[in-house]
Length: 149
Image (cartoon, rainbow, N blue to C red; front, side, top):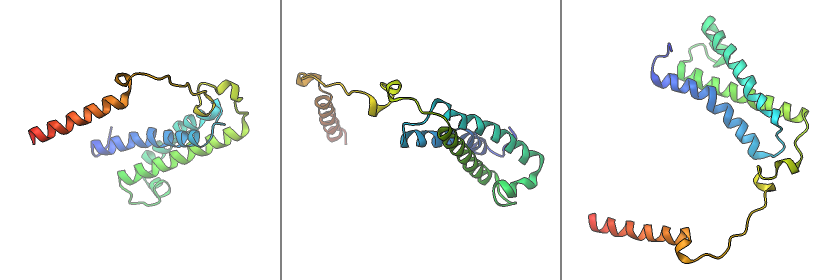
């Protein structure tokens, strides 16, 4: 894929996918009012990224605008590309969220932790408790470490 190494290629893929998704997940964690259309930030990120990569490929001087340095190597370009994609995704998601109407809480019941009723656990015997089995495994682990040390 015209990269200098496999690491440069992997970092380029991460800047395409991981950074913008992190922005969307971070926004989703901060509030439950993100509407369904907020995923448009991810779509805008794809369009922006395609134009961004093409711009740098066609005009190598564009690196000074993208990576804020004319001599930026591939890793630095990938980091700045991830930053720009994250910013575009977050900004578009926030703008779309402010413009559109959020879903009512009744539709989010069962999907959002704060709006879902937590079931009560019934009393179970000691053999059916995960803590009991975790303690047994820990004891066996310590015994095996002592034997085979």
